[in-house]
Image (cartoon, rainbow, N blue to C red; front, side, top):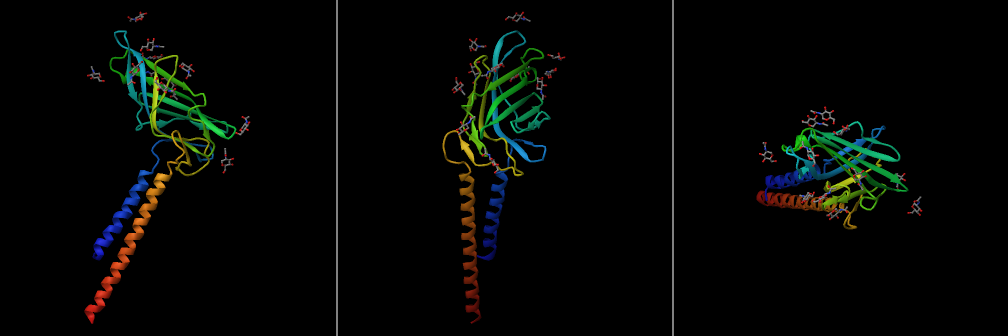
Length: 234
Ligand SMILES: *[C@@H]1O[C@H](CO)[C@@H](O)[C@H](O)[C@H]1NC(C)=O
Ligand SMILES: *[C@@H]1O[C@H](CO)[C@@H](O)[C@H](O)[C@H]1NC(C)=O
Ligand SMILES: *[C@@H]1O[C@H](CO)[C@@H](O)[C@H](O)[C@H]1NC(C)=O
Ligand SMILES: *[C@@H]1O[C@H](CO)[C@@H](O)[C@H](O)[C@H]1NC(C)=O
Ligand SMILES: *[C@@H]1O[C@H](CO)[C@@H](O)[C@H](O)[C@H]1NC(C)=O
Ligand SMILES: *[C@@H]1O[C@H](CO)[C@@H](O)[C@H](O)[C@H]1NC(C)=O
Ligand SMILES: *[C@@H]1O[C@H](CO)[C@@H](O)[C@H](O)[C@H]1NC(C)=O
Ligand SMILES: *[C@@H]1O[C@H](CO)[C@@H](O)[C@H](O)[C@H]1NC(C)=O
Ligand SMILES: *[C@@H]1O[C@H](CO)[C@@H](O)[C@H](O)[C@H]1NC(C)=O
Ligand SMILES: *[C@@H]1O[C@H](CO)[C@@H](O)[C@H](O)[C@H]1NC(C)=O
Ligand SMILES: *[C@@H]1O[C@H](CO)[C@@H](O)[C@H](O)[C@H]1NC(C)=O
C-alpha cells in the first residue's frame, strides 16, 4: 500500500460518513412553536382510496397518493400545551393532523384530508371535493411523552361511515417537542420494542471502527516504508 491509496481509502470512508449523515436528514413536515423551537415533526407516506362520482354519474373509486414534494405547511399549523396541529396544502388538496396531550402521553387523534377530485381524476364530475376523516380512539398512535412514534409497515385507517380509506407507511412522528434539533427522540415502534435508533448508531459505530482500522493500517504502513527507507540508506 502506498500513501495515495491510503489517502483515498480515508477519503472514501470520510465521504461515506458524510453521505450517511445526509441520509439521516429529516424529509417530512415540521411546525415551529412561538419561541422558535421545533415542536412537531411528521414523516409519512400517505395513500388514499376515495369514492367519487364520474361525469356520467357513476360511483367509482380511485387511488391517490399525497405528494411529499411541493407541499407547504400552512398557517393553521400551531403548537399549544394541549394540542399540536400540522396543516399542509398542495396543488390538489390539503390535510391536517391533530395531536392531543394528556397525562404524560400524546395521541394522533384527528386526521382530515381534503382532495379536489376534479384536479386528480380526469373522469370526475365538475367541482368535486372529497373529505376523508379519521378519528383515532387511542389504540393506534398513543405515545409516551418525549418519545417518537415509529411504524414502517402499512396501516389502513378506516371510517365505517364511508368507503374512503387512508393508508400510511414509513411513519415517524413526534409531538409536544421542545427542541432546536431535527432529530427524533427515541421511538416507540408499532411492532417491536427494538428502538430503530439502534440501526443508525450501529452503522455509525462500525464506520468509526473501520476508520480506526484504516488509520492503524496507514500508520503501520508508513512505519514500514520509513523502516525500508532507513534500510535503503544503509
Ligand atoms: C345522478 O344520479 C343520481 C342518483 O344516483 C340522480 O339523483 C341525479 O339526478 C343524477 N344526476 C345526473 C346529472 O344525471
Ligand atoms: C382545505 O381544503 C378545503 C376544501 O377544498 C377548504 O375548504 C379549506 O379551506 C382548505 N384548508 C386550508 C387550510 O387551506
Ligand atoms: C395518569 O397515569 C397514571 C399512570 O399511568 C395513572 O395512575 C393515573 O390514574 C392517570 N390519570 C388520569 C387522569 O388518567
Ligand atoms: C377544484 O379544481 C377545479 C379545477 O381546477 C377548480 O375549478 C375548483 O375551483 C377547485 N375546487 C376547490 C374547492 O378548490
Ligand atoms: C385520464 O387518465 C387516465 C389515467 O389516469 C389516462 O389513461 C387517460 O388517457 C386520461 N384521459 C384523458 C382524456 O386525459
Ligand atoms: C366550486 O364549488 C364552490 C363551492 O362548493 C364554489 O364556490 C366555486 O365557485 C365552484 N367552482 C366552480 C369552477 O364551479
Ligand atoms: C367518519 O367520517 C365522518 C364524516 O366524514 C366523521 O364525521 C366521523 O367522525 C368519522 N368517524 C371516524 C371514526 O373516523
Ligand atoms: C419531557 O422532558 C421534559 C424535560 O426533560 C420534562 O420536563 C417533561 O416532564 C417530560 N415529559 C414527559 C411526559 O415525560
Ligand atoms: C381497516 O380495514 C382493513 C381491511 O378491511 C384492516 O385490515 C385494517 O386493520 C383496518 N384498520 C384499522 C385501523 O382497524
Ligand atoms: C361501500 O362499498 C360497498 C361495495 O363496494 C357498497 O355496497 C356500500 O354501499 C359502500 N358504502 C358506502 C357508505 O358508500
Ligand atoms: C378501494 O376501495 C374499494 C371499495 O370502495 C375497493 O373495492 C378497492 O379494492 C380499493 N382499492 C385499493 C387499491 O385498496
